[in-house]
Image (cartoon, rainbow, N blue to C red):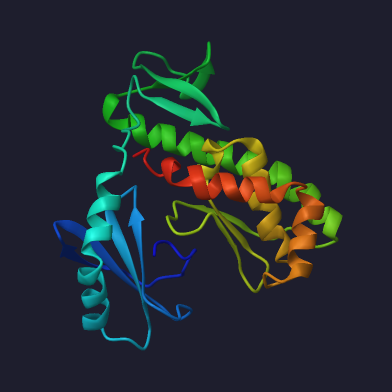
Length: 237
């Protein structure tokens, strides 16, 4: 039991199971009830198929409260993005430094990410900078990949999604988690390849994976990295 993969849930309703906050999300794609730990929120998520009543989902969560408690106890602590913290940028650790008197916005100096301005604006300025950097890195991969496949590059949106790293709409618009900028470049590149490949194959068939491998050779290793290390990227708050 555990995560089954990304689901597009509806707005969540929070309950309490064994002292653990549990967010319930209904998914029209889910075929069975599933549970996963939400490292960023410090709680858990119950994915409930659209046709099942809430009571059935909560009963399932209570039956598995032991598993929830065990996995919840293993959660690492969240890392506030404040002065002195260490943040990975493209997989390389950078200490965060507050430079309140500087007028340079956000910049990298001697291996550290420096943020100017008032302390109360530190996280917002840093997040805005990370999102801008993520967009630059994603575009640097997406443009040549789209050209290779002979498809136009449409709108790219950045979000802070917890259940998926990227998505491709039926109209060809791409969406990504800005937190990919915290991962190694080859991992970010794999996610861009994955979503760009959906421009040709809106499925996960063998043909789709052949397109992915064409754009990002060795994609399986990057998928494994995301499964293993990806949840840690959501610990930065």
